[in-house]
Length: 350
View 1 (spheres, helix red, strand yellow):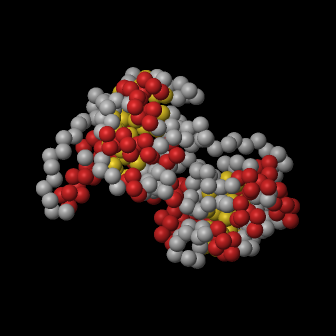
View 2 (spheres, one colour):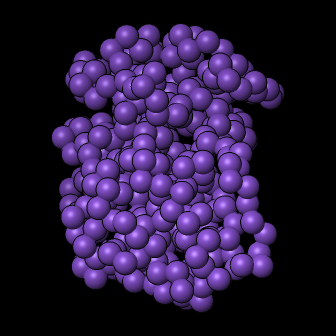
């Protein structure tokens, strides 16, 4: 029987695999993280020895040493879409398949972006904290969203979801995205410079690539409307945090809300999160029961496919999955199932 190791610590295991774990155990021999914390790579190599599949929480990196030192592993399945901390080249060199989860996080993450926007507009967090401490909070003036302008840099799945939600609130939406065409009554596609100059809220939603690193830098911040606010629920690498901190100090930036940053597990950098005018949540965007369950079940779906001698969906290096094909050749499980070509066409995650 396919032996599968789940890296999630007890808290994350309960959050993600409440329904999925029994389903996984129906198709695989399951071993779970025995510690009450996330594993180091050395610990993961030790505890996953003898397992053919590793199902990894987003906080578990797929370092080269893991693939180099685990000869039994045939697949590394990330229970998240982001695989930026997975050394796909090392996995491919060792013949290990890498696959990621389905994009079930879109509604949850987009709704958190809206929550952060409301928080900045109405000073919800600061006033709540002051009042809870027993003080008399100052009368912080807020403003309504209707009639304001939000600029989305990148309009993929989250951006599309936000376009509809913001338009329903009476917010004008500007989109800067050279790869997507958008339209709508209150949606306008513009160049990035125009978006930065006209937006009351700027939301960088571009993919994290070498070209988009520090997308919001000192030059971009200088183009923004004085007092505009910045919301980041995408990737920490999109912000030049030193430039953002300086813009907060000068008042050029009216506020910052972020669910991601450059701390471990993409959490906001603590020093920036502690500054006045900043609302920071510790990477909660996809942390809803609906998304957690869907992502865990997507890993179960992938294990079922492996057992059935089928290529798991959302594989990113199928051409290099030599260990998987070797395991199929020696396994009788699923031998009557549909086989996949030796070199299937796969779509890279977006």
